[in-house]
Amino acid sequence: MSRGRIATFGALAAILIAFAVWYFTRPSDEQKIRDQVARVAAAVKVTEDDTNPLVRLARIRGIFKDTLDKNVHVSLADVPTLPRSGSGRDQLAETATQATAIFRSADVDLSSVEVKLDDARLQAEVKAKATLVAVGRDAKSRRESRAVDFHVVLMEGTWRVTSITVWAK
Image (tube, rainbow, N blue to C red):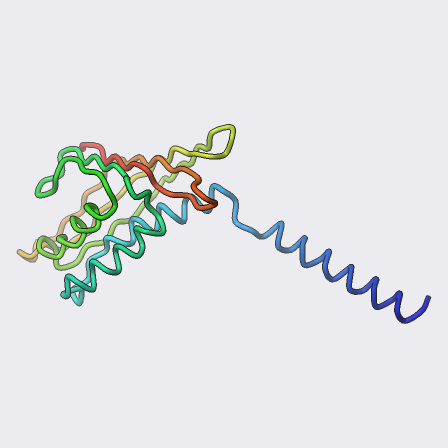
């Protein structure tokens, strides 16, 4: 076999191996959806250094632009100090920015995440348990868990949350 054929065969083998590695290690739709939902939860985190509302709003808006539909609908059952429902990612970003007025620190952890894709693999229902661990402005610690549902739709190649429902205790 000539050197040219060996080089061609080697190049084809390298391309085939690279494709196989990419194909078998790329994230599944379920993992992409989990990642988007986790980014939404992480966006509302409050730290004690999180004092500039303009910087916080810009950060949250950036994350929400990548993860939420422009007209996302949010329903918050029995959550004191927040509107019970609202629409639009900008309104949600503004509401999330105001969390610093209530909390010194706050973190939302999602667990028991279940993703159910429709048959066409174009939308999904996500059920999870959201746990808020927070310290209020009054220095009192809070830990609260609630069921939360997300409706997620594939839009222009990106999974976006179109609705969020936080259920009453």
